[in-house]
Structures are given as structure tokens and as C-alpha cells.
Amino acid sequence: MPHSMQRRSPGNNYRNPGLYHITINIHDRKSQSLGRIIGDVQYPDGHPDAPRVELTAIGKMVEYELLHSITYHYPLIKIQDYVLMPEHIHFIANVKNSIISKNGRQTHLGQVIAGFKEGCNRRYWEIIGKGEVAAKPQPTTSVTFVAGSFATSTPVSGANKKQRFSSGRQPLFTSGYVDVIPLKPGQLETQRAYIHANPRNRLLRFNNSNMMKAQRKSIDTLVTSNALRGYLIREHALHQDDTQIWQTIVERLLIANNHIYCDSYGNLQLMNHQLLPVVCHRKDKL
Image (cartoon, rainbow, N blue to C red; front, side, top):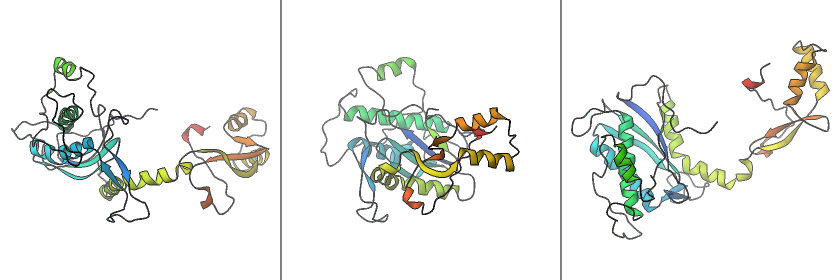
């Protein structure tokens, strides 16, 4: 199933106050990177060489829009935790009251995020020289922004959308967003920890890429298919003559040299003893 950036929390009214963990992906990770992961996983958080994201000019612009423009237009929304990864962003928005813009217009979270994206688009197009007025070249060591560049929450007409995305101008972000509403005790702390650990986890995956891929038939359980069938007959009332059920089971097993094998994912050196991995999946229910 393809990953969806349209997942909403069922039954939630997005005009109400609350905490929202928002994830947004960029449109083209190759040409629109927000930064790169640097540092070393051996150093703890807070150390100068700890894993972190070194932002590009585009990333610095997005960070500015996130931290300043949202609150500028919606004073009752505060960004508590955030991380800009090369191809996506995470942030927790604390909506302290009903979402009302600076000019007194009541709206909902979707319009806030749409306005944030539109403001980022304008600045992004200026950076790459495709804005209505091309931005002046900026020094590579800094990026200059105009306060309050966030777009209004007024819906964009079809004609304006067509005009804005003409001349080969692609949006910076994909459409939609994913939200998680931390409601259970401890869930907010878990979401915050997840956000801040993103750069470290990315480096861990890069440094151990061989462990981040499923390895086919990598574990020999030392169990034969005949032994498994005997166990199911003795312990789970599988009838000895019920070949249809047994054939369905066999079709889902990895069998080589008359032994049942399992796929693996991760560091196999952590398995100090010969174990029998068990995979449970609702599709395997007979």
C-alpha cells in the first residue's frame, strides 16, 4: 500500500485547540533538499559533533517560515518541537485556543498548513529565480527573509493556482500532511523524542545499511516440515488427512534442504542462541 500524506485523526475537529504532530514531505527530494545529515552517532545530544541537520538555503527559509510566520499570522499557535530532515519536516503545533488569524478570521488547521506551504513556495521560487520578482543573490553563509511572508488562509482560485504553477514552477511540498494527536499519557514525550532523534536514527541507518534490508532465508530454524506438521496434528487438532490446510501452510513457508527458514531484519549477531522465530500475521489466519 503506498504511503499516504493525507492521514487524518478520525473524529477530530481541526478548529479546536490541542497538540498536533505534523509531518510534511517535500515534492522533489533530489532538487529541493532541505539539508544534509552530519555528525557522529558516538557523540551524545548537545555535543558539537552529535548528529544534526546542516540546512541548505531552502531549509533555512523553511525553518524561518515555520518558527516565525505561523505565529505571526496565528498568535495562538506555537511550534514546540521540530526537525527539518533533507526530504521532510516534523513539528508539534500547540493550538492554545480556537484557530483565529491575526485579522480575527476563524479557520482550521488545514488552512494554516496550506498558508505555510504557500508562503514557503513564494520564498522557494525566489531562491531558485522563478518568483514573480527574482530574488537578489544572497551570500551563501546567510539567508535574508521578510517578516510576515506567510500567505493568507484565503483559498486559492483555480486560475491563480494555474498561474502560480506555470513556467515550470513546482511546489516545494507535496499535497496534504500527516497528523498524530498525542492523547494518551506519555505519548507526547514519545513524539518529542521521535522528532529529536530523527537525525541520529538516519545516520544509524546509513552506517548500518546492510542491517536495514530484509535478508531472505537467513535463519535456519532446524525444524523440518514433517516435524511442524506433526506438531500441528498433536497440539492444534490439524487432521492428518486435511491436505488443503497443510498445503496452504506449506505455500507460505520458506523451505530449503527440508528445513524451514525465516527471513530476518537487523543485526543477526545479537542472536546468541539458535531460536525459532515466529511470524504472526492476520493474513495467515486459517
